[in-house]
Amino acid sequence: MLVDNSCAMCHNKIRPQLCPDFRALRPVKADQSRPLRGPEDLKYFRRTPVHISERLPRESSRDYALRIIKDNIISLRLEPGSQISENELATEMGLSRTPVREALIELAKVKIIETYPQRKSVVSLIDYDLVDESRFMRDVLECAIVEQVCELVTPADLQALEENVRLQNFYLDNYDPENLMWLDNKFHENLFRIARKSQIHSLIQNISIHFDRVRSMSLVSVESQQAAVQDHEEITRQIRLGNAEMARQQMETHLSRYKFDALKIQAEFPQYFKQPPSSARETEAGNKF
Image (cartoon, rainbow, N blue to C red; front, side):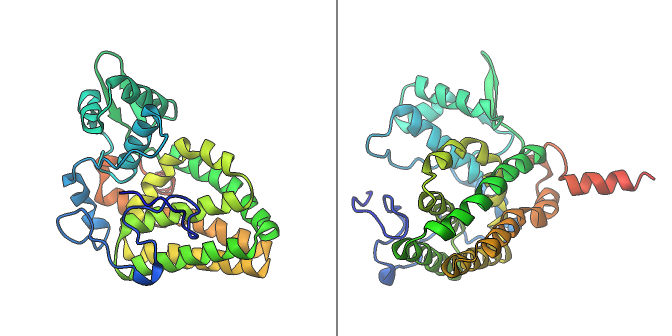
């Protein structure tokens, strides 16, 4: 059941898996049949059924369907290349087919879903050109956002960011990539909120799914989790110091980390990708001469 009160960490409804009192936090068991310890274990996501969370208060049927489909694509419960059944999703969510179809049409606009009229809808394979386009958009926006945050942040805002990072360290110690991903997203959402640009954050969510899907795969690795949490700690530290230039540089580093795992992830799951990462394509081109 959703908790009604707002959390100082996220300034939003508290996630069901997160205890509202940080001092009473406890590890949350993952849905998978055994603990995941690295990128090689991503294959176990494929055995996990689609996760249907509770509908939020005042959430429309279309928005609910869109959120559930996006979350399951990012978590790989809906694998790249897998076929989506409108009827099955509608039944599982307790909706008619219309809002599910509308959600799929919306996702098709940003090329995360491929639709074939009168035939089927398929989750798009990972296209690194689209991933990089999504990352570029976030890089441009969030580097500017973090500079504004350095000017506008309040003590309460800093407390929220620091509590978020403490929670990330908790789930890093207890290995929970799903909650880490959720907290990672909340950290960035908080930056937009502090900069008074929450509407922009809402507008970029659909195109961001290309980047978020690869981030989700990367965060299964303990090393990648540690690097992401350390980045958030350093960004928060620079915000506290009011050092806009250093905060911006750390944000650039943070948003580029997915590239370090790209080749490893592709080698493990070639069936998920439309083409190799650009670095691999450049290497192949260089080998021709």
